[in-house]
Length: 146
Image (cartoon, helix red, strand yellow):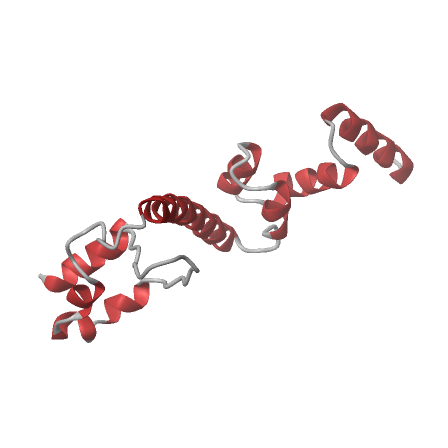
């Protein structure tokens, strides 16, 4: 098939799908190079076509890692937004749990553990002094306390 024919077919597909010809090209490339789970996530709208396309030159393992990181970030962001909204609405000085961050960090087992290196820290600008922790982070703290 000549290049002109390919362009015409690509243009027709783009018109029918209501997308740009660039997105048709990205989709074709993803079908050849993307990990099946990345393809599924892009087709389901969980990640953008452009984001999946940017990962196309990574190894299959790296693509999956990027997908899992993206999913974790989205889940964390959603939860953080919900928690912040609740915190700001209530403007309550009482933390949602009876423990303080000091209670969590005190103790030699926790302070000296490398397990804490697995917990990411993200600073956000909201009123008050509160630390939001994922259940996974709390499980890490719980395992360290035992």
